[in-house]
Picture (cartoon, rainbow, N blue to C red):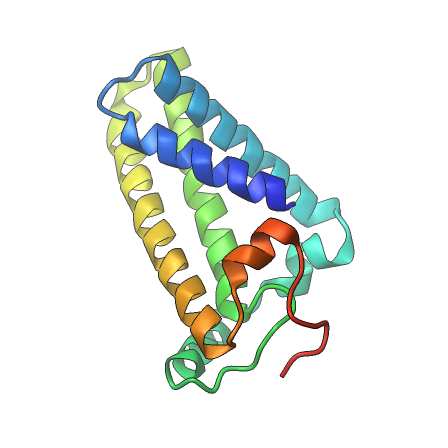
Length: 162
C-alpha cells in the first residue's frame, strides 16, 4: 500500500511537470499513475479491512468537522486515515482517474476535444496534492507525529489513539 502511494505520487508529479512535452516520459508516467490509481480503487473494494474505502470514507460533514478541530489543535488522532484523509484519498483517486482516462483517450483515440478536461483535472490534482501535503504537515504538528516517516516505514507512534 505504501509503495503504491509513492509510485502514484512520483508518476503523477512526473506527468504533471512534463505536460508541455507530450513525449514518452509524460505518456508513460501518466499510464503508471492511471494503472496505480485503478489498482488502488480495486484494493479499496476488495483489500483487507483497513485498506477498504468502507473503513475510512465518511460523510463530508465529518471530514469538515475534523478539519475544523485540526485547525484548533484538538482533533482526534487516527491510526489509519483521518476523516479528511479518507476524503482526500477519494478526491485524489477520482481526479487522477479522470486525468488518466482523458489522457489515454487523447493519446490513443485522438479525442483532442478532451484536452480541456485533461488539463483541468491535472491542475485540480496538483491543487489537491498541495492541500494534502498541507494537511499532513498540520496533522503531524497537531498530533506530534511524523506522518511522512510513517508512510515510509509503516509505523506510527502507537496503535492507541490519543
